[in-house]
Amino acid sequence: MSDKAVVASDVCRSFGDLRVLDSLSFTVPDRGVFGFLGVNGAGKTTTIRILTGLLAADSGRIEIFGREPRQSQGRIGYLAQEPGFYAWMTATEYCAMTAELYGFSGRESLDRAERALKRVGLADAASRRVGGYSTGMKQRLGIAAATLHNPGLVILDEPVSSLDPVGRAEVLDLIRELGGQSAVLMSSHILADVERIADQVAIIHHGRIIVQDHTASLKEKYLLPLLEIEVEGDVSGLTSALSAAPFVRGVSLVGVDTAGVSLLRVTVTDVAAARDGIAAVIAGPAVRLHSLHSGSASLEDVFMGLVKAETEAVR
Image (cartoon, rainbow, N blue to C red; front, side, top):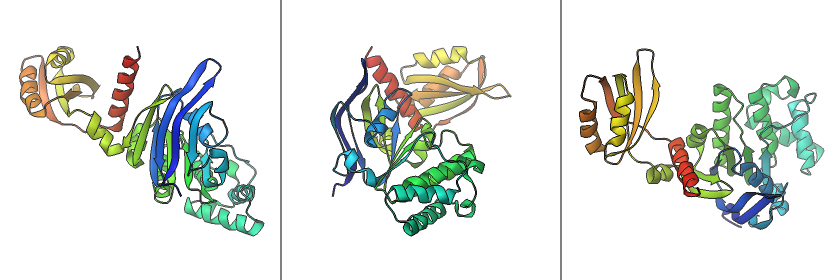
C-alpha cells in the first residue's frame, strides 16, 4: 500500500495548441489537507479532472494510491466547484441514491446516508428538500455525498468560494476534520482559508508546480522580515524614500483609515537595521509616526512573490 495518495509525474495536457499542463509533478500524502493553489487558468481544474478520471493526460503518469485514476475511483470522493443537486429530493434521498451508485445495497445505502449527513451536521435537516437549503448547507451536503463511501482521497474544487463568513468557517472546520482521516486535496484561490487548514500546499503556475512544501516551511523559506508602519500625513514621499533604503526590499500601502492614518507594510532584509533606519527616514515634518512594529506575513505574500518571480523569469 502506497503512503502517497497522489503521485503525479511529468503530466502534460493540451487543448489544441494550448498547453494547459506542462510536465506537472507533485505528491499528496495519505493524510492531511493539501492546498492546491493557482491563479485562474493555471491548470487546477484540468489537473482535478485528470485525477478523477474524467479526463486523460496526453503524457506522464498519475497514480492514486499506486493505481491509475480510473482504477481507483472507489477510493476517491469528489465535490465539484458548482455541484448540482435534485432540488425535489431530500438530503437523505440524495445521499442514499449516491451510495447506491457506489454499489451499496438499499439498507446499507440508507445507513451510510444517515451517518454521512450526521457527520456534516445535517441530521436535523435530512428530511428537508434540497431546494430549500442554503448555499452552505448544499456544500456540506456535497461533502457528505463525496465521503459516504469512506474514500482515501477527497478532492474539493473551490469548496468555500461562494460561502459567507459563517458558512466558510463551518465548512473549513469540516474539511480540517476530514484531513485527520484521509487525504484532502483542496483547490482554492482564497489563500487565507488554505493557510488556516492546509498542512501542505503546492502552487501551480502555467501548468507547472513552482513549489510544494509544508505551509509553515514555505513562509520560513520565502518570506523576508516584515514591518508595519502607521503614519499620519502625505506618504508619497515617504514611500519613495523607504523604497530607496538599502535594507528595504519592498513597500506597499495597505490602506488609510478614517482618521487619515496610513498603514505601510515594509519588507526588509535586516529588522534591526530597518528599525533604526526607518526612524531616520520618517523623521521630518511631512509625516508623523504613530507606530512601528513587526508584522505577520501570510501565505498570500508567499504566493504573490513566487508567482511574480516566475512570471518575470519567463518574460
